[in-house]
Each structure stands twice: as C-alpha cells, then as structure tokens.
Image 1 (cartoon, rainbow, N blue to C red):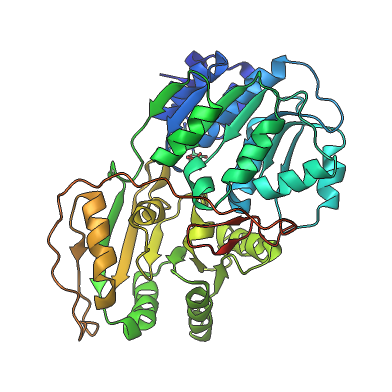
Image 2: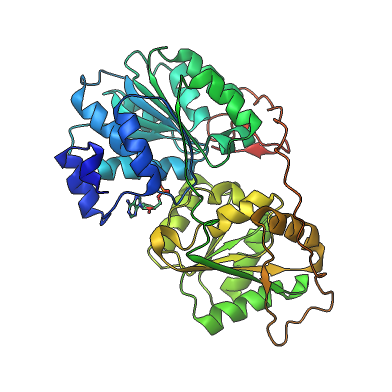
Length: 422
Ligand code: AMP
C-alpha cells in the first residue's frame, strides 16, 4: 500500500515523501480514505501510531478543495488536551500543509492571548486549540464557527481525565450541527464512549495496536533499587551507557526539579518539564532537548503524553506511574516509527503495588536486572503475574472548572481535583 493509493493529491504526497514516509501506517491506511469520504471516525490509536497524519492529511485534502476561510472563522478545529500536543499537532499541520494555500493557527493558554487574537483575524482553515483558551477566545469574539466543517478530538480519553468535559460540551454546542467528527483516543472507556455518542454520527470504528504493546521495538526492564540510591544509579547509567538523550519520568513536579538539580550538580545538562513551569520554559526545554543541547529531560506524566521527539533512544522511569496505563504511554516515547528503543525503570520496594498493576496490564513480568553496588537492602518482592482480566473503569464524574481561571492559570481539574494548566 502506498500513500498515492489513499486518495491524496500531489501537493500532499510530495510533502509526505519529503518527510521520508514510505508506506502509510495501519491507522493511516484505515482512516484516510474514510475521512476523505467525509465519514465520522472513532479511532483507538495511541501516540506513535502515526495518528496525527492520519487525520491531518485528509483534512488538509478536503479543505484545499473548499471555500476560502473568512475573518475569524475556522474550518477545521482540532482540540487537544495539552499545550505541548497542540504545538506538535500545529507543527504537523504546518508541515503537511506547506504546499497548500491554507491558513493554520495554534492557540493554548499560558501565553499572551493578544497575538492569538491577531492571528485569528484573518480566519484559520485549521485551528489547533486546547479547550480553555479556545473558550476564552470565543468569549472575546476572536473566533467564530459558522464555517466549521470538521471537528477533531485528539486524545479524547486524556481530555476527560483532565476534566475538560464541560468545556468540550460547551464548545460542541457552539458548532454547526452539520459537520464531520473525528475522535481519536488511546482507550475507549465507558466515559469516552458516552461522550462519543453525543459527538460522532454513525462513525466508522477503527482500532490499531498500540505501538508498544505490539512490543517489537521497545526493550524494557527494571532495576530493583533502594529509593535513596535512585539518583546515583541514574547518574551511573547515564555515564556508563553514554546516554546522550534520555527522557526521565518523575511522578511529582518537586521530584523532577530535585533530580534536575542533582544531575546539574554532577555536570549533566538537564531540564524539567511539568505543569509548574511556564509555557516559555517548557517550550525552551523541549527545543533544547530536541537539539541535543540538554542531555536529560525530566518530565511528569501530565505533560509527557504526546511529546513527539524523533528517534528518542532512551526512556527512564525514575519512579513508576500511579496509573498503570501511563507505563505504556511512557515507554511508547521510545522505539518510535520502527526504531529500536530502550525503557528502564528504577523500582523500589514501596512501588510493588504499581509494579504488579503494570505487569497485570501488560500481561508480562518485567525482567529484573541488578547492577553491582545497587542491590537493594529493601528488596522488591517477587511478583506473581495476576492474570485476572481488568474490569473497565467506571466513568469518572468530571469536576467543573472554576470560571475566570482559564487564561493559562488552569482550565480543568483532573481526577484528583488537582488544578491543571492548558
Ligand atoms: P503520531 O502517532 O502522530 O504521534 O506520529 C508518530 C511519529 O511517526 C511522528 O514522528 C511522525 O512524523 C511519524 N510518522 C507518521 N506517519 C509515518 C509514516 N507513514 N511513516 C513513517 N513515520 C511516520
């Protein structure tokens, strides 16, 4: 199967070829023809499967044939849960659309609203937005939806986890009823399906294997280690293996900052990326990491999902995630697009519960390795694989975001009621 068979025209095929994509990924093969037929789509696909191109390419194709966008109007709206994902999807739209006379814009909180208002004045064929900032812009008349043809919800499950349900429903109520709806989600919980019922219309349902549970390109194992020894072990691993670009996951923001201070003290260039950092600091850290001017990027789960860093060879779980599914998302940062990657976890005795939940989810025991000098005093108990099926989660009741807190100071609450920033 080639991209040319999918119904895309030459200006788009040229960009795809320039990107070095030789064959379409499974989600692209399934989704592109359906989207071009103007069907609604509900797709279970994770980051790393090529899902962004799967919806962006046919949307650009469709838009290139239609009417010109008018002032402040939007023709395709892509909603994403996080600023990082919005920026990445926006960059993909720019890239894939560079041979087409289409305008695109990206809007998210945490940065000044005025330049975004200016940009929207001429209208946007494609607008990529986080929900809170989009509502702020709408309330200031900077964005209008009379010309809207396509709505995309990217990472719908994460949007619900982050408490954006009310924002999403509010936005949908503003859109013309006649439109194409595309919903992408890593998982389809009861809650996501419930939302889908109100959004998509007789959809084509697609599903592709998550890139990492197919487990062909990511090697992953763990080092049992005492909690206190984790920073030293990480430092040793970085030095001994000469890891030049490593993404480290920390469960907490404070933990991430502490680890960065430690690594910097030891002469390793590192930066943290989490919800307490300003948007500018996050963008800068990510850019420096991509450009290899910093060696270690320490991230929390909230901001990490959707980070698309090409050819990331190394991921480290400095602590295991509370939510087992996040393990899959984390290790999915490496071994992308057919490249071999490695993901290692530093696990202490306190994390046995998380470890067992992850092993149950991935239906395998994680290989253990011990490094001389780091054998834990408090050993991690031997795990027995729990093979009982995992019951689907009950829909969570989303919390209503506080009004007036959208402009980068937060626009949603997660399941724990923590304030989130989009
Ligand atoms: P996504 O799942 O959208 O986050 O995409 C993951 C990565 O795969 C991105 O770096 C894309 O540039 C890359 N990609 C998307 N489609 C293809 C393709 N057909 N062939 C090779 N790489 C691709």
